[in-house]
Image (tube, rainbow, N blue to C red; front, top):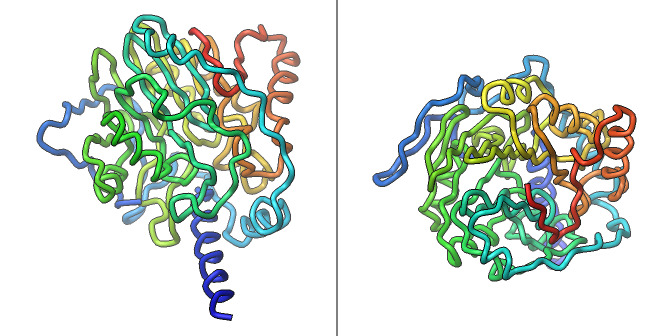
Amino acid sequence: MVRIRVLRRAFLVSLVGVLCSYSGGDSARAAETSPGDPVIKKVAALAVPPRKGVAFKNLDPAYKRASYFARLHSFIVGGTWLVPERRVSALPAAVPDLQALRDNHHEATVTWIGHSTLLVQLDGVNFLTDPTWAGRSGPFSGLVGVRRYTPAPMRMEDLPPIDFVLISHDHYDHLDEPTVKRLARLYNPRFVVPLGIKAWLADRGITNAVELDWGQSIAFKGLTIVCTPAQHGSGRTLVDQGRRLWSSWAVLGSQRFYFAGDTGYYKHFKEIGDELGPFDLAALPIGSYTPRETAHPVHISPEEALQASTDLRAARFIGIHWGTFMLAREPYDEPPARITAEVARRKLDPEVVWIPKPGETLPW
């Protein structure tokens, strides 16, 4: 009986954590700086995040997130958490050329690790986006949560030396504690994060970090890294909702890269494209968009991702945030089919959209 109560309590705590995570930190405040931090500049005429008390808000005045009850109902009916996990198959993976990645110091490349994790190489600099090697996405360092069904195509130890890591927000599938701790031990990269996440990292012994507000930038090894808006949310528990900022990122060098993180569709895409574009490559989420009544404010659909790419003035976009964790109701292999259909409907060049296999490296 005691064991049942303990398991029930752990399950409820983990459920609360995940429901918070997929809603839409440590408080809404200015960036924390430390001696030796890079110079933070305001370089982009982009909107600053609205605030209400200690919480950040989204730019869209019409933004309204579905209630916790509606999201709980979605999880129950959708079968993503409270019923046995749906049977899915791992995506076919490519075998990455690890030596070529280590030897590459000039060509711009992108390698999809899975979900929102990309290894990007630009101007001799290696960086990761929202890295997660977790077998489950959820609380308690991944001991519970949504199972990963497509494994990472390479080990963290096999990566080329990582110079910096971009984090878009603090939800479990984008900020995985065991992953960032291991990366810090292996490579000591600079973590570039939105407001509030620097303190979270410091609490876990990771001090090589800089946090930015929307429109702020730093220079790093010849690149300019700009924190840009997104429409989403943050929080890992019921008591820290909205207290850490969420963002997208632009990385500007000899070529221009954009990483959307998690986001709903709003005019911020066009504003970013006008201010910082055109982009050579934009990484945009194409999964976890159902049911639309609850997902729409914070997750773009494949069709909206294609429109966002146009707004950003991106030459190409790579589809991310799909095929790794079962986080929504749509069939796990549906996003690429919807993208392909939308490209055909708009009579666009199919080469503008990249849907790589896990482990596949593409030059850009």
